[in-house]
Each structure stands twice: as C-alpha cells, then as structure tokens.
Image 1 (spheres, helix red, strand yellow):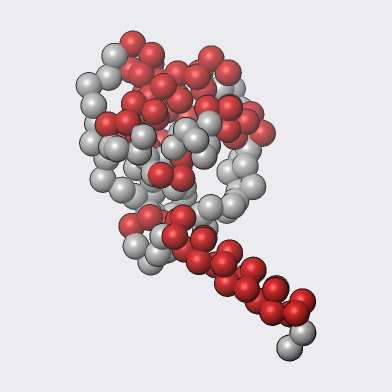
Image 2 (cartoon, helix red, strand yellow):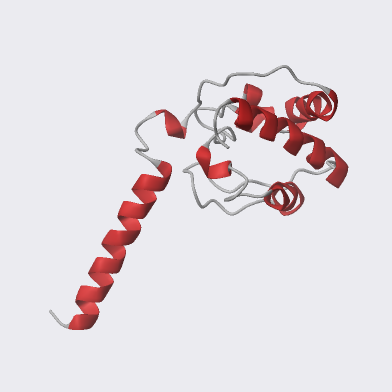
Length: 135
C-alpha cells in the first residue's frame, strides 16, 4: 500500500468516526422523534410556535421533536446556534436544504414564509432548545 492509499483510508475512517460521534447511532431515536420539554412561551416564542405549527410541524413534528419518516428534530445538538445559526434557518426556509445530516432527503423551500416569520420561528425553536439543554 502506498502513502496516498493509507492517507485516504485514514481520512475516511476519521470522517466516519466523526460522523458517528456527531449524529450518533442512526438506529436510535435520533432518526425519529425526541422527547421535548416545552417551556412557558411568551411573546415572539408564542408567535413562533403558531407559525411553526402551520409551516414546519408536518415534517419537524410537534414541538420540533421530529417525525419518524419526514424530518429531523430541531431540538437536537446538530441545530445548536454554533453549528446552525439563525441565518441557516432563514436560508433553509427560503431556498430549501440539501440533505446532509439526516436520512430524510432534501428539504424543500417553504413558500409564503417571510423573514420575519422565520425570525419568530427561530425564537420558538431556540426557546425549546434552551429548555432542553441544547445550549
């Protein structure tokens, strides 16, 4: 085996380990829904919940807990602010997202949802994340 082949094998193994550690065992609850503690919501978070329920819950589940076959939980370490900042939510709603963390396929854009709507949805999702120890 030459040095290039060894390098490629080591890099592939490191990537596989990193992916496993980051998203966990796909056979577990991380590919479906999670249990979510719901805090008392006020103001923008309440408005965000109503918008989330109308535009996002079909795939991302009630209280952003995910669904078994349509979309991942947003109350998950993958979506914490340092990995998926608020702008990522804006871009996802506007442009859709190519599948990259989960086996659910690509997310389509969400027509009719404004930047202000997504801002309120983000406040709601971040409230849920904080109440569940994501950040």
